Image (cartoon, rainbow, N blue to C red):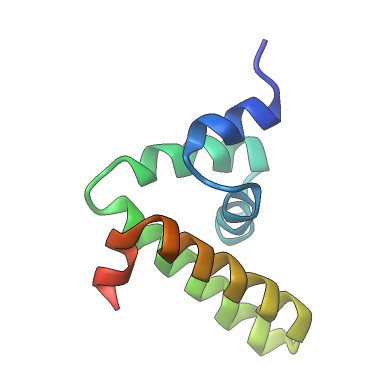
Length: 90
């Protein structure tokens, strides 16, 4: 049986990136891990994940949640650093 951590490990995403997808899509994290894994392996998926994280940042800014904004900006930086094709869609 696969654990949540196994699913994260197989997704080519970090737990924080999966959490950002779950937050944006309003889905459980295990489902977000599957969705993220699918997206990260498609041509237009990496830019979509980047947009998801950017929209999460915008939402946190609107709520005035400065700590979450900082966390999400770090998630975005790591995502772009580890998935260079995300930077192509700036």
